[in-house]
Image (cartoon, rainbow, N blue to C red; front, side, top):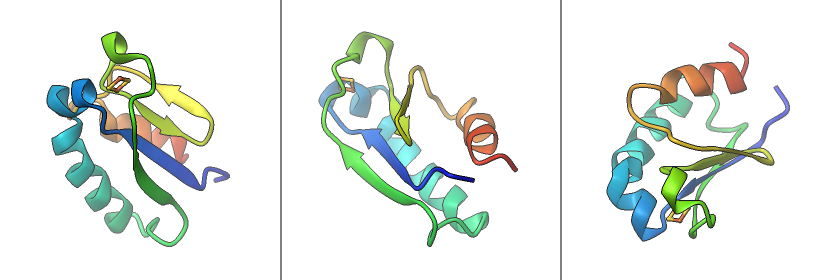
Length: 81
Ligand code: FES
């Protein structure tokens, strides 16, 4: 696992389209998988891709269209469980 930084877009569009709830889910995921010490998780401003959001950045990769139904799979893949 090389990723050590993850940012969630908290711009108004992504925030209202679901990132508000996803912050909680992601925090719990990191805790449950003992990743809290390894991954810095922060909020970020608008990533300039609102129409494709909600968005997240993992390492230097932006992932668009995240939701409660696909976020776990994305995190599993990115953190190569
Ligand atoms: S608000 Fe998230 S990309 Fe613009």
